[in-house]
Length: 188
Image (cartoon, rainbow, N blue to C red):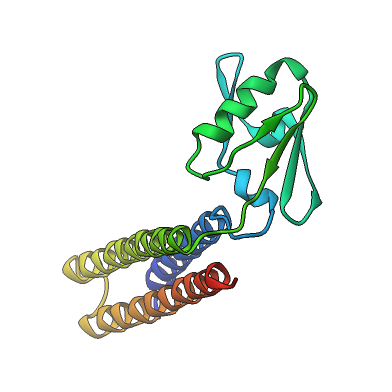
């Protein structure tokens, strides 16, 4: 295999790994019936006009399995944190006692579980689409090398086959992550 082919495959592999990692992060942000700090990873608070991640303006903790507590470093932003949590698509209702915000994590209803499974499937499909795009880019590079006579037709074909194998492996990885998260969501 030529150095050019190895470079194309390594870049494609790296980008596909990034897509899988991104999907893993997005899946961890979908809430199950248990309290987890990953729920708030994508949540930003409008702190003095700047969207700031919640974990940078408040100390988050889980004192019990179905409760998350946010203690802001600056008590004046309590209403902003509360507003950000209510405005998110997490479906949570925080309570503000003037010093800290308590966020009870309610048990999921059957309807909410089904909505979250749909969201997981949608996120998985987005990740698979990104991987297929990376496959297309790598295949285009192989075609261009073949067209420019820098690579033989057989080497280009082998390159396409290698890219497809890597695509299949990464797609299977995303399916595995999605199925695990779906199973976790459907547990009562």
